[in-house]
Image (spheres, rainbow, N blue to C red):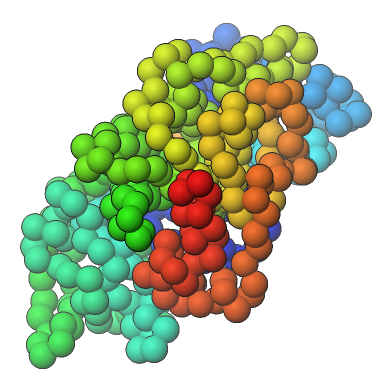
Length: 422
């Protein structure tokens, strides 16, 4: 669901659970509010009630009070003049109405899509805790990693194990997404896997559990005579800040000389997570300014809680978006980090995400944000301090062998090491 990506990035890996393409705040919109808006419709629990609830939320919150020059009240009358025979029919009408706003980030989600988004923003999934890929040579579904403290790791699954079947269903020509749907399920239920490891085939039965998805990866790199703390942040989930803090503290304890923070391929996530993480690197200075439909602005600042003042380089690409750009902009404008890579995506909008009574959801753009220097990056992106684009050959090489990322075969990482060494 990465709507913000312009092109394929080798730095976006397949997790059970996906990426978040929004800088969002989360709220819950339930029956009580619906009744206060329109008691008669809400009590009917009809598709028409749902249509009006969505209209009311957009009417109340949408960042553009001119609604893209649309007569938003007339749209409501048109919506309510129709009879909807099913919720699916109402969903179609809602999506058509939202399209008139010309904003791809103000969007309606059916219950399945909303559940997927909330599992991503929570940073948790119900499953067995593995990362998978389709091996390019064998074309088989293969385990990349068993996540820490997961049922898969406790059962002894290893990187390189090939998954032949899931609950008896062959994985030949199965996509990562389809495999994930089969593996995920209600906590406490079981899933069986047929596996092959060099020298033997075996079957294993695992009980699904709640898995905290690792969105932060840390490793200590020895580069000539320098110790580098390499941190890769893949998305801004509700656990991202805690995981980032643990990574920085680990680097501090290992007495690294500097850090490289890799935001390549990171499409964004929760606004608060980006602010919390910025404060881990900044002791003072502005982080971000948001402006709502009334022109009211709110500025967020550092609060003296930085846990590292060591040299820092940030890696970005054209798929670094939204919350990634808030963090990058804050550290760049405050001259806390040197930014290396390609121009970022350019999404300077904030969404509020609401749960609707039938389990569906609505994301509404509620504010525009600006970097500490007052720069509007929407549709422009952030220009790196050191611009270094990867060639298509280099991208393919890193995509086909992710182990080459953050090595001498990764030109942007190599340039970051040179920058922090200076």
